[in-house]
Each structure stands twice: as C-alpha cells, then as structure tokens.
Amino acid sequence: MNNMLYQFLSLDYSGLIIALFLLALVVWVLRRSRSRSLTWMLRLIAVVAMVLAVGAVSHLVRVFKIDAQYPPPGKMVDVGGYRMHVLAEGPKDGTTAGPAIVWFPGSHSGSVGFYDFHKSVRDQVRSIMVDRPGSGWSDTGPFPRTTAREADEIMLALDAAGEKGPFIWAGHSFGGLLAANIARRSPE
Image (cartoon, rainbow, N blue to C red; front, side, top):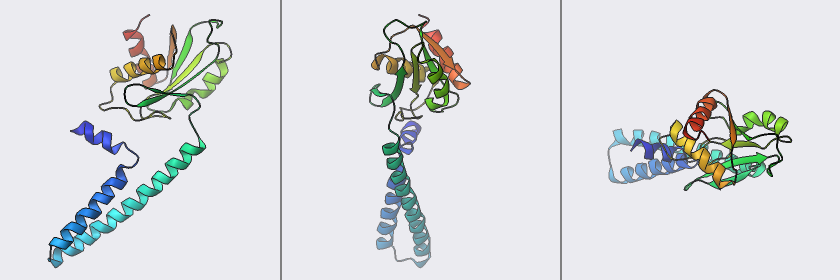
C-alpha cells in the first residue's frame, strides 16, 4: 500500500488530483449536511483545496516550461515501463584508451553533477552518465527504491542504450555505493 502511495505522490499532477478530490468531497458533504458547525470547517477545507489546486497548476506550468526549455541531451531508454536518461559520448568503435566510464553523482542528484568530469574525458574514452529513476531527466521508477533495484536499472539502461562493457564505475557518496554494488553483481 505504501509503495502505491509513494508512486502516486511522485507524479507531478498528484497535488491537482488531491485538490480536486477535496473540493468534490466538500461539495458533496455541503449538499448533504445542514449543520452550521460543519459548514465553516468544510469551507476552510475548500479554501485549502483551492490553494493546493492553484499551487499544483502553477507547478505543472513551470514543469512544462522547463521541460520545453531543457530537453534531455542524451537518449531516453525504456527499462520496463518507465524511461531513464543516458548520455553517452566519446569514441565507441574500440579506439579509446580504455573501458567506458560510467559516472554516478551522490545522493539522488542528476548526472549533470558530473558533467565537468564527463566533458574532460569524453574525447579520449567513452564517457557515460545515467540519471537514476527520479533524478535528472529520468522518470520516477517503481517503489521501494533500493540499491539492488537501482543497480539492475543501471545495467538495463546501459543495455537499452546499446552500451557495451567493460565499464569503469565512478561514483561519489551514494553513487559510490551504487557503483560498488554494480561491480559486485557484474565483476566482468
């Protein structure tokens, strides 16, 4: 049940749905009730729901503007019902100085946190940045979010983007834990 709630609340438009539900509930109860003591509370809830609706619409407008202004620079690949962003640049034909580098920033930051590192090596080696689900340009993935699930998602995203190993996993903070988990699962 919690996972479904988290999944719903992660949607950009969930606030609008909650606001509309509250408004509909208030209207329904007001039509059925004649109690004055209940009426003021319902009106207060209606005001809160309207403020929530305005905030939710404002959020959606801003998200659409940002999405239009900053499209993903890499590929959006399907990993089983949701999409992940993979930006891979640099030589791919085997002319590189070594394995491809896959970058993982800390926390749940988007891959742009490692863009300067990516840019500094992409002319010599294949350099890959992956936005984990819920970060950067990637869609929100299923819950619960676990390191094991994220390790599998990274491998699925790399495969869907057509990237072949061997890879060097480069991570910072939580990204380091994720990189170690992937290396342990796929030592080759």
